[in-house]
Length: 264
Length: 330
Image 1 (cartoon, rainbow over the protein chains, first blue to last red):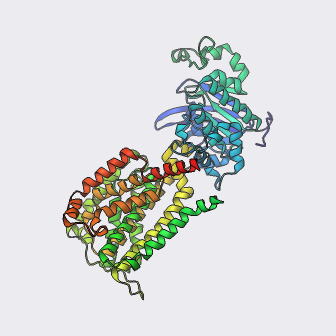
Image 2 (cartoon, rainbow over the protein chains, first blue to last red):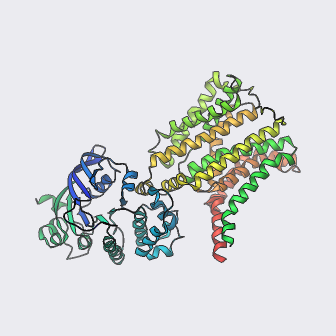
Image 3 (cartoon, one colour):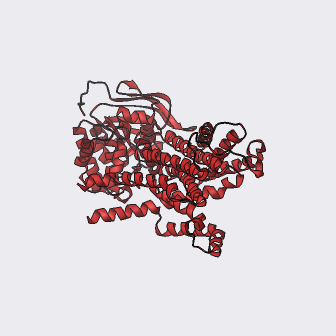
């Protein structure tokens, strides 16, 4: 909350040559990226490129086999998920993963679990300022919320741990364009509050519009990176990795066959 | 104004109930009736643990009667054969049952739902055979007899009263402990795990630790119940710890409702009393009692099906609905 955007300072998160996978199936094959304090960085790419696995490896849910994760100047490569949360890394998992039978309030309360002690009223207040609808739904169970409200609750729950770095996995999943716009609008406000965000998104266009920088991931490694503006304007990236979104919908996926045949 | 009163109401009601339950021997002179209430207390101890494991953490166990058996045989053997004083035997029995819970929890950490149910069922079947075959310790099918009644030093109590007080005194302490868990941090972690394992991890909850804790604790409580059973009944036989008992224990938690302690405890009281309906309703004719006992299994079945159909969230669910309706109108 006190950090500022400063290009000169050491990055908040550095990932170096990271390898990880499930059992004997490698998913990440040497990922390099960094996120500076106050930035919104987006990670885009086709299904199965390893974006979610990268987020899970950063917070310790998937074990790194090689490479390093450095968070806030300290090695965090094989950190335990509960330590990561306490250190200020909060993951909003793909598919929200809310506690369906529990109320909105109980979900938020559990978000502050890692901090021990009871959550402060200010923490709730911060979430309600961002998502006023959650205040109205406080006593309702999470499973009765709409998709958009569930995503808001998932982000709100993550914010309850007072993170410095928010890892957002596919917040637009299954939501209407209007709701997606609302959720991304709150990202801008979070940035103003000083929060750093690493965003995984399939809706490339909206992700790059709200981000400072972007990485394009392909088969477990970073294939392209640059400022969000450049990536948006780059014809090469646009057509090969991100799909030509201008002709049809906003959330088109890159055609798999074509990405395989062209070298960057 | 009414807020503070309302907030403390559950605690006041619980304390009053505890006093009534512990003072019951003053009012009840019928020894059979006291014994029936003692059995209720034994089931309450086991169900409190199972309510934490299944109702709260969502981990199903079809083998909890086996943990009761471990506690009963351990305590019975140590007092009747090894000559241990009963308090030491109870502590050892609880520790052995807890170790059994840990031994079952570790290899089954990755199992969920039906698969965990099958694994725990397998565990209880293995133990069921062990109870019969380990004759040197358990006495096999003949059972383990000659377990001395617990002595309370200078207190000269009638044995039925002493047994009743031992069981219910323990049950009250167990319920205090369990309600602390349900309301506290471990309970919240378990509820989260029940809701979404991934979501729990995202909140910084270690699912392995939570599962192992829940399993070990509930096995320890089942063992405690078994140990007290051995001491108060004086005889342990393998038929008491069969699959049917495990299922009835689980049914008590299901009928009581998830995320609740009071619900499963109430269900444990009601379902246990159903077995001894002749003691509760003395006016009942012999034929009626015989009928009820012959059809016990079917009555359980019908009650369970009816609850699942009309109140799937159990007693606790009905209570929650009533509370929200009342809260909404006032």
